[in-house]
Image 1 (cartoon, rainbow, N blue to C red):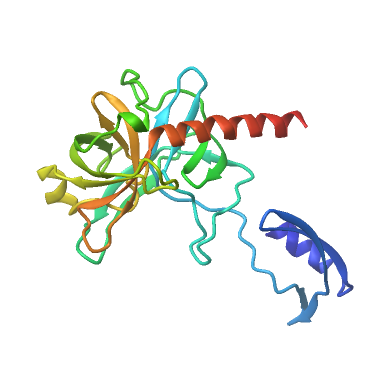
Image 2: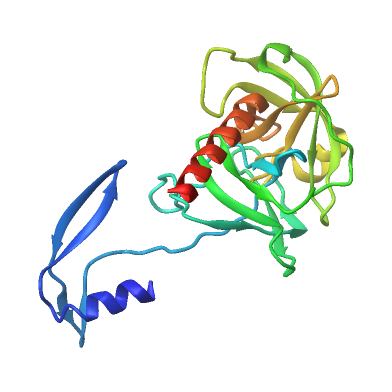
Length: 258
């Protein structure tokens, strides 16, 4: 923000070229700042950072790649996917939540722990955010990746955190599966765990990315909560997230090489 503000002031009101990227296309526009209340203004609204709470879905110890959230980080005002040039993954301590109810999805409440970054974020895609961690975020042993063809209707579990910094396992049911569709709505899940339902009312905002485990394999991640019935939500296939993580890693490596 400060750099752009200084650049606009230095124009002294003269027309200058501005290079922008719109819908994936680079173009050059002409901008003439206007003097207003003693300083030059460009009429631009600038956001240079964003932060929020989400859940890490997986970490691959062989590559240090991680994926989380299960859906893109979007601008709170425009709804558009935020372009990420760089970012960091931080530890969060959950200290509470607003309970979900029909028509009013709740949300997790937490604070950044204040310790050093645990990794980098370099990609914000339709099915989540991706990057590399410095080490495993969990002491638990690795489990296999489950492919979409292996997912079936029935019992499953999710790992999520509603207090402190350690996740707990809760029971759910996978009620619908869409093998053909893409995006972040590959399956419909329902929370069946009595303890979780009593405490949170179902799925909370901030649980996005909570891993879905079925038959001992990572098969997906929670992505959205149903507003009318907060015991239910959508999930994305884990193999979709993992393949996106690999593709994003290759693009990042190519950018660094160039």
